[in-house]
Image (cartoon, rainbow, N blue to C red; front, top):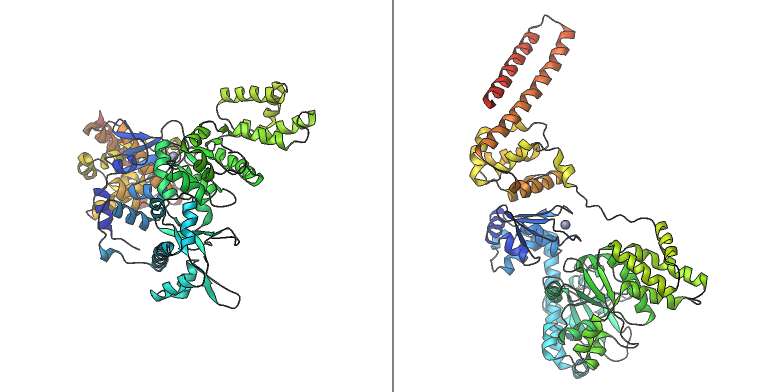
Amino acid sequence: MRFDDTFVDQLRSSIGILDLVGGYVRLDKKGRDHAALCPFHSEKTPSFLVSDSKQIFKCFGCGAGGDIFQFIMLIENMTFPESIEHLAESHGIPIPHATKASGPRSEERQLLLEIMAQATDIYCRWLPQKKEALSYLSGRQINAQTVKQFSIGYAPPGQRLLEELKKKGYRVEQILACGLVREGDSGQVYDRFRNRIVLPIRDLSGKTIAFGGRILGDGLPKYLNSPETPLYTKSNHLYPLNVARDEIRRRDFAILVEGYFDCIVPFQFGIPNIVASLGTSLTQNQVKLLGRYTRNVITNYDPDSAGTAAAIRSIDLFLEEGFHVNVLQLPSGEDPDTFIRREGTETYQQKLKGSQSYLDFALSQFLKQQKAPSSPKGKQEVVSRILPYLAKIPNKIEQAEQVTRIASRLQVDENLILAEMRKVPHRTEKQPPLNYSLLVDRVTPAEKILLAAVLEEQWCQSTLEQVEVQLFEGLRTEAIFEKIFYLQKGGGTISTVHLRELVDDDSDRDLLENLALRSGELDLFAEAIENSIQALQRMQYERLSRQIQEEIKKEETKNSESTALDELLNRKAQIRKKLKEIERGQG
Ligand SMILES: [Zn+2]
């Protein structure tokens, strides 16, 4: 799908970046700009800046930057066209039809989404017709409002969905591509979900991209999910993040559980910051996804051995992404669903408050798994298994306290643990991909001032009248100024958002964003701009003078009597004169 530039501009100007970003992170005013903790990487001091006047954001830690569309693409995991649609829809701005010229891929995607939406409706309509399904849901105390909110439906036996969708004009290949039906060995096509309660899995904008199905009665498997399709990659989603994320962000912590009903029931009973991984094991992508909304998580997996192993594995992934992790284990045989229904929300909340730190949890598990935990060998093994976790505690004081605690719990000398810890390869913090100072070091102060001036409405015209593209030859900002002159020639508006779209090279774009957001630190006034132009002119003439000197040398070795040499010497004298003029002009 392509949108025309006028519409994109119109959207950009009617949705302010401050309001938009402020809906996701807490912004504090800092000088002319606003600062926040970066939602795209883990940090303790804000290096994420938003400029209202430039309409861009930039993180000086991880390098993420751009306009409102980049922000939505990153935070909502969307493509560019999706970000436009999302912003237009959520701000009630109609998308002109003429601009919706679809490409083949997004057209297919739209069609699959449409089929999934139809299937969701059909399943929902079938639910009230199946007594057993209704009594299953009421047995789990799921009320009508929750059924509606989560669009819980019913898939009957046979091939009824296939028939319904065919009646609506969809082709079998299209329905197959959605994963709603499957092909048997004999080539016969039948419904994937049969005699199951079905729950739509939705993307962040609330569109159905897959289904999960719980069997009614005793069939196997108990739970069945959609296969991977062009719409759905299992490892990239958390259920039901589209409804849970606001509360996760607001409460600044998430509860991670295993299954659909482990989410839905707590949700209905007033615990809305809860998501499920919907797979046997959590993935790095899912952890990153959650990390956009919070860095605090309490895992609440089944206390059986599979659940415990999953909890241990998840700790590693969460620590890797800088999360604070606690582990809640309910009494044997209980999951969040059954526990809340029997004991109530209050008791569950107390359990959450009393959840163990990941370190205590891991330690007790390692001790449990040891045959002889109090033998020297047993202790040694437990120490070596817990060491990597100790080493990951970023705060040194907290780390020392934990070492003391663990030493006393294991009844070993804490110096032994400390000695072992020194052997653990030192983990340095992940370096941000871009280094601001490195990038900007090669930019002269004059370039910084002139770029800042051009990006400022007040100074743009008067500055551009005095400079030309040759002034920036060979300088770090040359490519950026080339685009500035290009925009000027075409009579386009010179703004950071337009420039960053034109700049081809990623490092140039990054530089532009960096300089644009740091430009508030510069004092712009006529004399500073004047001086900067002169400084660059001097550099330009010095460059020219060096070039001519080289050519003179070449000519001299060839033929000292040539007229070309005279001309070169002449030009050299002129450049000298220009340089003198500049110096006088400055004095
Ligand atoms: Zn960042």
